[in-house]
Amino acid sequence: MRKMVRKPKGILVDGKEINKTKKKMSFNNEVVFGDGLRRRKLSKIGHHDEVFLSRGSKIMEFVSCADILALAARDSVSFQYKRNLWKVYSGRRDGIISRASEVLGNIPSPFSNFTVLKQNFAKKGLDVVDLVVLSGGHTIGVGHCNAFSKRLYNFTGKGDQDPSLDPTYAAFLKTQCKSLSDNTTFVAMDPGSALNFDNHYYVTLKQHKGLFQSDAALLTNEDARNIVQEFLISSTFFGQFAESMVKMGDIEVLTGEQGQIRKRCAFVNS
Ligand code: HEM
Image (cartoon, rainbow, N blue to C red):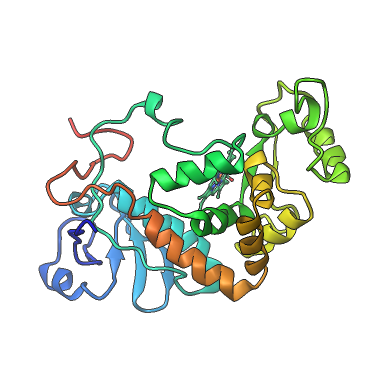
């Protein structure tokens, strides 16, 4: 396995300069980053894992945008539970090349079947358990009509509906997405529980209300179906989600001298 070069997990600064004493002390999981002169506390989750935002400060020389995203994802999901649901290893560095043309080849499509999804995940070192549990991320958030309306209006090119989609739910979705060309309307991916990070996605899925073909695909394979069943137990889901998030957070990570720490996340340093 690739040896990861990891920085200490926490770096503490004030808005202007790094406080060396605190920096030394901050090996105990304190992570600080942020936005300009105001140092804003984003969340406080236990006394060991405080995350501040203060972009534009010196901290930006040490904490990459990739780490910030990983931490923000962890913290936003953990917030409702008042404890960190998984560990984020820091030390990622930011890429210096970003091409729109490479995106679709590196992320799974909502139109994929199980075989393709399994291959997509395997290419990144993730297995079927990872696929099923990480799809549980669709317990929060929304999907735009164009990612699933083919299932409502033209599933096989004959103006038909996806037979694997619950007909009552499909009828509801049609009231939201009025045509195949609607690419602005969006709906909750886990209706009734879309603001809660929980295992309700699997309840929805088993009711044949998974929004995308890629969600429904998890019921088309026996192994995946059995895993879905296991994640109906909340503690099983949370434990595996944490493990798979750490694994996903370790995919093709730049470390050491690779890449850079972007000063502004939307731009490669000039
Ligand atoms: C299995 C492969 C996956 C596919 C095909 C997929 C596909 C999609 C699509 C099409 C959307 C809707 C985007 C939009 O219409 O705005 C979406 C949203 C989302 N996905 Fe996935 N996704 C996958 C895996 C994941 C994973 C691994 C996670 C995280 C663990 C995740 C978390 C989310 C979240 C939170 C949203 C909601 C974003 C929002 O509300 O704006 N997805 N996904």
